[in-house]
Image: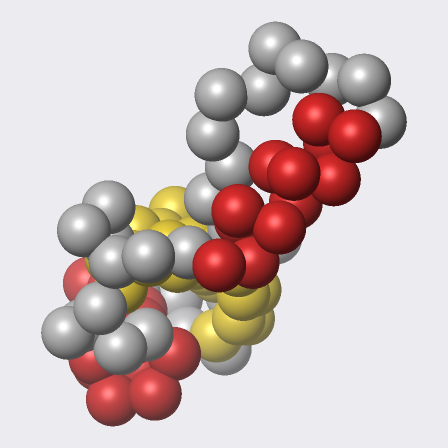
Amino acid sequence: MYKATINVQLKSSVLDPQGSAVKGSLHSLGFEEVENVRIGKTIQVWLDTGDAAAARKQVEEMCQKLLANPVIENYDYQLEEGA
């Protein structure tokens, strides 16, 4: 069993209106030292396999086909065995 924790973020060249809104709200709450906010998502997937290479291959395919939009988003992931 492997757990993949996948982090998906907009590419730095893509505008992040949600991040800008959160930054503005943080400033209005007095957190003036916040210089930038980028919003992303974290996805956890559990795979019933004992093969790390197969798990990595499946996670890559999931990211490319569904979990991330490679045109505007970057992603990375960590695999944990036995999680």
